[in-house]
Length: 138
Image 1 (cartoon, one colour):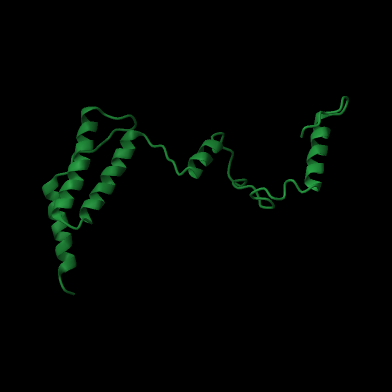
Image 2 (cartoon, rainbow, N blue to C red; image 1 turned 45 degrees about the horizontal axis):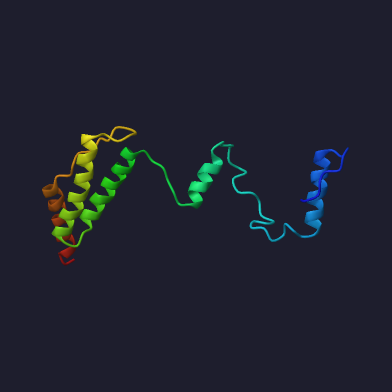
């Protein structure tokens, strides 16, 4: 659209002419999503839609640090129970317990942490019991 709007012509009319001419030349036919409905038209309007869409495209998420740590603790517990050796269980728990202890000393932003360091011996016992159940012949 390098042309200037002619004097006396309504802007909306001028823009419509430009779009119609570009469409006739096929300048829009190779755009991604051409001929497809716009995504999200059926959802209620959200003024932060563009931020959420950008985060989805970039595979990003934002959670308060306290919730991130809760999720890390949950994942670490699952990883410890699925570990291949007792040493691996202890390493996973030591790493997450260090993070939890740091967060308890200086609470992170967000909702209350509601976490305590894992009792390593209790989790090791759970890990052993889980392994015994798998190793027993059926």
